[in-house]
Length: 483
Image (tube, rainbow, N blue to C red; front, side):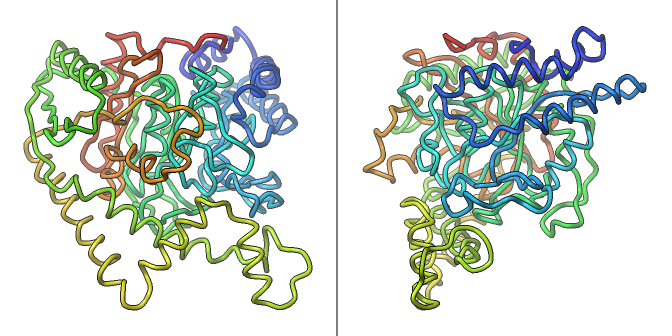
């Protein structure tokens, strides 16, 4: 049963081939057996899962149906879950039990999804390798000596290892798409505002967006359907109708205009990945797509702009963690300033401290105009580049990452080298666009992803292209050895 996709599970439950309770028990046993190798979970919620599974079976027995009814999933551990530890991968929140459910959690629970647990992640979603977690690094199931990508690496590793069919993630600069690429999954970052951020612990508020990680585009469509929609509790949520994503999967690609930016194929890209991307383009051309070269001239400024804006927002968002109201508190503080300093110094890890300091500096008097304001102007130029490109093409295609996964610890002494792995994904967050990564092949036995970007609220188009591609390729069906 663990090899079934989300769509296959939905059909199996509808046809009464197995119950949600049976499936949940199988997957919980599999997690107990295999996750010690991966470290993909922070918390397991066995009692909650079995309660939800029994309730889903009862709902089906009463005539209810639905693609998510009785389907096991997991949540990245920054989605608040009532009464369950929500740690954000940090010592700071190791003892925090959320008093409410995030909107995403509540919506998926209402649809009947079964929560198996909370997945490991880079601390406060800051990282590209899932090595900054207080609970230890997550391992890539394709090679346990390599990183799975971050910050949603726990969700990605768990799905790739067939511990469960799908999981939620969040994407601030590529944190769904990059781990999807490095673990052979399909991962979707929706348009900013499409999925509620209420109850999703913030890293950078103008960039963060929740989305699905699964093996196929069809599964991502099912999970996104349950997550998306307007939320009055979230001031950044957009009141836009949610289409039926599954209904658009089988549309023809005849005449689809695909743009391939020339800037994507510079010196930093592994030539073997470039070859796989070109092979993907040829496959889509066979399906009727028309390909042309385009330009995104301001892409070169994306990383410096992002690493000013994101840390600046993080320094503001994380100021609430001060040892006073909730979260980690140092022992025996001598005064209020000592409480602040030691609680934050002991509660936050090195990567979080580094980004808070960078962000506070960029926002400080005398530097705001030179750094933060200039980065926001660059952000607008990047958005303008995309708007101009989408006047010529329907989607933009390129690599998700410049390299395959790297060895655990290989970039710990050089944070900038890890930051550069986000060069292709960051621009979608700066512009607020939807982006998807899908499996495109392997380099040295490690998975590689191809990224698709579309205009605002065109998630259905991305899922349609990915689904058609997956009907004619089998990269997404490959399973890591031993799992």
